[in-house]
Amino acid sequence: MLIDNLISSVGRMADHVLHGRIVGVLGMMVEIGGVQRALSVGDRVTIIARGDRRVPAEIVGFKGERALAMPFGTLDGVGLGCRAEIAQTDPVIYPHESWLGRVVGSMGEPIDDLGPLNAGQIAYPLRNAPPPAHQRQRVAGKIDMGVRALNQFLTCCQGQRMGIFAGSGVGKSVLLSMIARYTSADVIVIGLIGERGREVQDFIHDDLGPEGLARSVLVVATSDQPPLMRRQAAYLTLSVAEYFRDQGKNVLCLMDSVTRFAMAQREIGLSVGEPPASKGYTPSVFAELPRLLERAGPGLRGSGSITGLFTVLVEGDDHNEPISDAVRGILDGHIVLERAIADRGRYPAINILRSVSRVMPGCNNDDEKRGGRPRPANARGLRGYGGNDPARRLSPRLGP
Image (tube, rainbow, N blue to C red; front, side):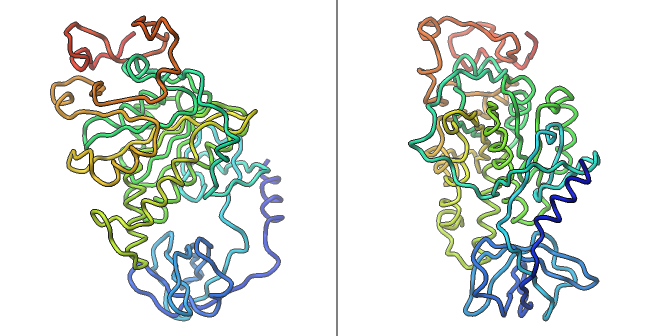
């Protein structure tokens, strides 16, 4: 299989290389001269730094006769006159069934010390377009989230997109890990965008566990990586999910978090010179959010679906801040985690009255709509202990 991967990689190599020269460096922005007519926004270049170190970069704008690029790594060793080679193809990945159980980085490279990744035969663009709206399947078929609070009060259908809204430290990541471990979905694709490096291993070994990891693909970009890496990790997460969807699988795509994706796009926009809008977020942030989130959902007829759960880090517990407000208007429902409930020690800290699943009436049968409470065998959470307030029936105990 390794030989096949090498042969496939050689076959995709270009027979010639266009290149320009670095004519300016300011902060994290690199100016390239000599090839502006051969470039467009989103194209990739490779900067040859001192010592033949190769620094991948992306074209993010133009200034006069110069192309503006941002690197995927550090600019150590990059100076005036350095060579900038232009990639001849759009950025794509080649997912494969054997990626299940693996942890990959933003560039699609393995970061779990388990050897190289097998490459598939079909290229998936990192910035893929969502399926045409009139050709998509209907959202239908209940999906077991593995958490009783969600199954009972916020029932989800396959292909639905939901947001988990909460401030810091209220339990978003823990709720995601519970869903990933106990859901009935065929495949789970998890994007950890801008996470703390310490939390990655904890999530894999303590929260996800061997059984959850065996049917999952993790895409990781930690908070110390450049904004392009964090943004690309979000795109890569959806591209991997689209591959398994096209294999006829019902995919659960978990992303933590959309807010850090928006922050990365804000850094890129401000570096290019975009005017700051609401709370410093640039117009491109609000243009990129629907392009990313619309990629989740039901697929074309005859394919599978992508059920999306996206966490939103609510700044200052203000649920009307710009990113929360924009994402809430795009998704098919929202799960609100309340700090006051978490402070009383009840997890998951879901405020049932402030949360909604917009497709829930179509998920449940007539008995369930009348108040019946069938419980999936692997559901966890929500062990009731009385009281009229739904929030007071939440318990941290996880046993069946």
